[in-house]
Length: 356
Ligand SMILES: *Cc1c(COP(=O)(O)O)cnc(C)c1O
Image (cartoon, rainbow, N blue to C red; front, side, top):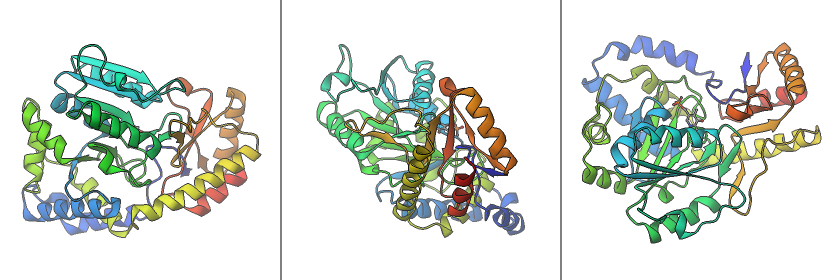
């Protein structure tokens, strides 16, 4: 089966060989405080920085999921309040999740009435510790272009300088070139654009983030950010990590081109696919908001369809050995999603185009 599901998604074909190599290398039985593991981890972090163009002064950590990153941000960086600007189901879920941990949580929908004014940051009582955004909304196929990220970054910098800006980039990291400098925290799990099996996530933090973590001094949890940072400073982890996942990440990064190259390719393929679908009479699930910089995603393409259309489309694609992605959350029964992830080839897309 060829999978266009946006997570877990089609893994790179090279994963098969990498698994065999991992077995024979002995790394799977090595102690995680051994120099063999430390070298693997150090090498992987170096490659991540290089391939994804992460600023030199930002720290990179590996944890187990994007959901864990939501938890780490809530526990270790949000003593009082988080503000969530969301444009879909994952952003809302993050907000609901944070509300169980953080004393005060505010959610604001990014709709056509949304404006960047200082009062989104300064309502009544207190400024937020963290502003939380979903860089690429996997549920409805929208993403926050630099035209959104830049003014938000400016607003935070001028109106609330101690506030951190966090982005869930689970379905865009390793596919798009992220504007790291304009955010403090960026994270993604590897089962989307990285084209790898689930169970590992990349967490990128600015120097300000680690300074703020020191001030807050949370040391209550096994995954408190300070414990993670202290262990990673020695190329170690807080607990026995997903060594196989780290090995696969290392091997795939080694053969990937720089992300700018990948991003350009994906954008062209997305533009082409959107045009083909439009010509076939499909509508995108939601309308982009270009004036705000909330645009159609180049990595997750979501289309509207009624339940009858959906059933017919699924039967047709499955007969051809293709899995398309179901709708998500409130759009479960009236949409389908197509992952435009780097592990899928142009040939895979050609095949899909003839079937949909
Ligand atoms: C898939 C996804 C998640 C959840 O990832 P896990 O690794 O399962 O925790 C969170 N946010 C977004 C935007 C996603 O696409």
